[in-house]
Amino acid sequence: MKKTIAVLITAFLVATSLTGVSANAQESVIQLGFPIVFNAMPTDTTSIIYDNLHYVPMRSFCEMMGAVVFYRERDRQIMVLTRDGDIIAHTVGESSFTVNGEQKLINRPSLLDNNTTYMPVDMISAVFYPDRIWYETQHFMVQKQLSNTDYHKRIQDVLAVSKNSNFYPERFQRYINFHVNQPSYTMQEVLYRVNLGLDFPFYSNVTIIGQPYELLVLVNKYHQLPSNFQQYHLVTMSRAYTANDGRQYLLAGVAYENYAKMADAAKQAGLSMRVVSAYRTESYQRNLYNNKVRSTGKINADNYSARPGFSEHQTGLAVDINSTKGSFQYTAEFRWLQQHAHEYGFIMRYPKGKEWITGYSYEPWHYRYVGTDAATIIHNEGITYEEYYAKYVSVNEFR
Ligand SMILES: [Zn+2]
Image 1 (cartoon, rainbow, N blue to C red):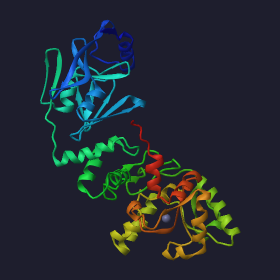
Image 2 (image 1 turned 180 degrees about the vertical axis):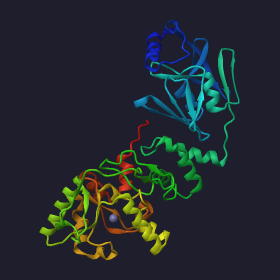
Image 3 (image 1 turned 120 degrees about the vertical axis):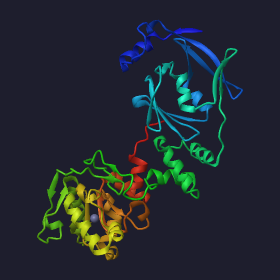
Image 4 (image 1 turned 90 degrees about the horizontal axis):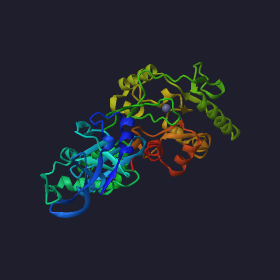
């Protein structure tokens, strides 16, 4: 069987400016290669030959080796999770790939033909470390002793849930490590906790927030605002809505607009809501945190006060209402907020019983503006913003 792939090769040349593709590539043809035999067992996978080199269909070959394959349409990235726990990333048509982030080069780029990606034979060795690859009586022979240690069983547990919608292939090794270290959790709990970042202690594995001006920005003990961050669309709150203690209170415009509606509605119900803390600069937050550490110790300070760069107040989207004392939870204003805050796009950010997710003690007074769509889901499902973010905002592009 011979067929020409002239159009395809030309497309690769234009699209990726590949080096190493010969000038007469347009005349090259793909020939059917040999049936693949794995550990002495025939498979229904066959190699192809292009320009005198064997290639194997990547997906079926990887699956034959016990790996799970993902694809990201946007940039044609293939991600392979191996039964040895490695993460292989490769972009279709390129002559390199990474193993656990480390780049490796191959002699030829991978080929795309008829919606199938073929990898050159030298890539197989670098990915799977087979014991032996050879050709014998028109067959493509692969031999590899499959390990079955306890560790490999844990990897199998993770691979078994890898097609769940909340499985992120780039977190493969974090799932494995968490599963190994916390064997009492179910696999669903493993995925859930790692997706919330809880496989790392608070204030470690910190990501600098890339889009700090987004309404749905997540600021917590794993997501830090950039050091030069400054909210710019701030407005001064009317004294009718603040503690009216002579201080100036600022909020992001959209949060203020909706806070005012909420406070007006509460007033109609005979209640009084006044903001006692709104926007804070990073240096203000630093003083606040340092004072708390001095007066109550670091552990207690971390339960109640954010470190500079980690406070939602720096976004101008958060408010503390009436009091920062636990007794606020027994007020009529608090009960009203429990029922109505989401209608104005606000959520109670640090609820009781979810301290292990948020990293903060119960703060009945702290509200965050996220918009009514998000707030309504969070209210109805009784979840934290971290859980909402993992479930609805975080994008899983690999299929
Ligand atoms: Zn607060």
